[in-house]
Length: 309
Image 1 (cartoon, rainbow, N blue to C red):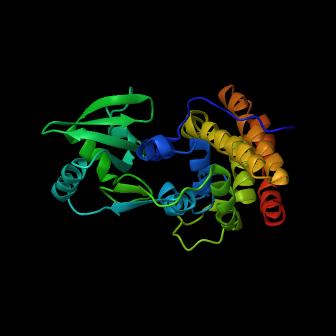
Image 2: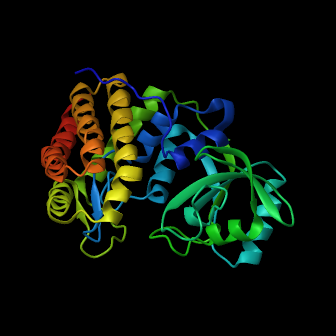
């Protein structure tokens, strides 16, 4: 089948935050997401928590390569204590909005239902700061939202997340090369192959599985013990973002002439998306069967990208 691009809402927080910082020169969020490498793999962190992104990958790991492929640079700063971070942010805001993250989503009390840490990462763009609050664009559907400063600082501390450093921000976004979207896609293929290879020097939790082994392990767990937490993670986050990433990858690969890769990415998107209904209605055997069909596609994708295009 021909890949058909998706347009709509979804948890693309760091891609959307990058797009806001790029302004009128921003490429599509599909291309930004593609450039981070996120569609190219699957992992089970610690053998228990599934994500439809590469083994050893996180948004920070994909950001620098994405900026290079897109023709942009930025200044990264992080760490220190809360007072130091707040001082850095105040100073940076004199020159314009600031890209912030990862932050702990559970501390973002403007989002309905958030009352404390949920170990979920997020990215925002801060616009203004006063003594009591921050004004920001939250790409999770909340433009120009104000948040009490204490809540923001707790979120920015990021001490409940599995990756990233406290008080991370990016400033001084500069476009250093005019690179077309198709050129960005092609420039990102080596990184995609790298992520699919699962050869990473980045730390991963003990027991983490990747690609086909992750899909098979998740199938077995869903079939025998899909507890409430796993089901909620899948139906409220992992499936939706995973299907969108793969759908965007299919559209990007097709644009750049990677026809075999595009067909495989489209197949992956359809399989991941097909998990939503059976997981919601507790037809777990059907969901497990879908995951077993997904498992071999990662090796096929790597081979296609190595020889296609």
